[in-house]
Length: 438
Ligand SMILES: NC(=O)c1ccc[n+]([C@@H]2O[C@H](COP(=O)([O-])OP(=O)(O)OC[C@H]3O[C@@H](n4cnc5c(N)ncnc54)[C@H](O)[C@@H]3O)[C@@H](O)[C@H]2O)c1
Ligand SMILES: N[C@H](CO)Cc1c[nH]c[nH+]1
Ligand SMILES: [Zn+2]
Image 1: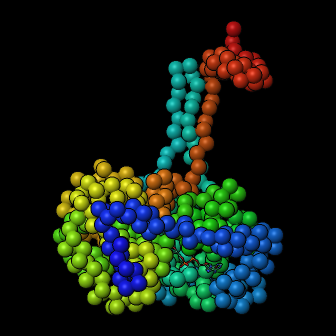
Image 2: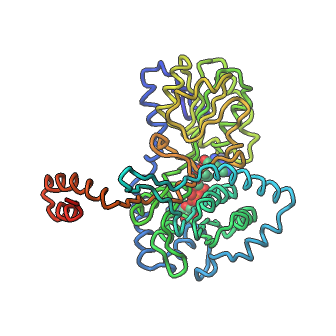
């Protein structure tokens, strides 16, 4: 591993004896959720649960540097949202509407159907899909404003048929972002509160005098948000843990190094904790990308954040060949995977774990962040091993349907009776036996 105090980004090689240890250290984001974060989050959750609005107001004043007196100052009216939409330039309005349209079209395809089938004896079995009554969407806002995240959270909720959508978004120093408000108007959000962090998660999970309690909280956020979501799970549903953005690019050495450097920056600029990793089996190509990084980094508006992210959690990894690159993908299970290779379709079957897969040199991850159509709320920190992108299915649940005919109940009763007596649960057995015909 190169010396982190001088290099902008670490250079690793899979043949290095300490490679796996270095990689583990690099990937460990949950490690930043130390005892101090846990303790603070627990304290905020307990306070909001007990004192409701007053605790939310105090925490918001403290962590977002505001000085409001009551919750009414932290609620945005539908008129304010519409006004923000109307105030956009035609170019911004068109871009937001085009993105919303594409996101809606993609998510319409995810809609699951209820289904039923009838057995020979007339028994009907099935599954009924029902939208959530009320969903809470967390839109991050600490270090950047995310109108695109408003669309990505709210549109699938609408497509799913959710009755009420409650959005929370922090506004540090009281700065409102018109595009965020406009996106909430466009996506038909019902309530918007300008609160963030653990206090917003708590308000959604427990409800307060002003914030309606929701059934599920979705959306990405920083370590305070992720830790709070984890803690309230059970009280409410959560979608996944979507933490700092990540990108893993695999290059065959033929993509313009400047393109790749900018693709890495595109996620590094989100957050000092964001992660950008490039893998290639071509050492000279990695040198060229490193040179592009050094040359282009000072041209970024968010140079400081991107530099910190690359220094802390970035890496250029030299692997042996394509097969080893695939092993690394499945081990890292990245949020975003860019396959910057000649024939990406040939790789697809072997990739088991990635939140979203961007195929080919022309598909920059940034297009997925805004407008390609698939959701940009994706599992991070290796959780793509067991989680999926946010989708319509996150805003719905399923109920089983069992409708026995008299003959069906009789036949099932015989089986149930035996199994229930085997468990010594005789009330179960007798309940089933009452319905046996002979
Ligand atoms: N995975 C995705 O789909 C996705 C999408 C967009 C953004 N992101 C990520 O979401 C994250 C957003 O983080 P963010 O910080 O910009 O916004 P955020 O809204 O998640 O967090 C801001 C809030 O954190 C709380 N907070 C900050 N410091 C605190 C402290 N010391 N004590 C207690 N609370 C504190 C404050 O209440 C503040 O309102 C970034 O890491 C970004 O990369 C992920
Ligand atoms: N890359 C983020 C998801 O990790 C989403 C986003 C929003 N705006 C820009 N990027
Ligand atoms: Zn992004």
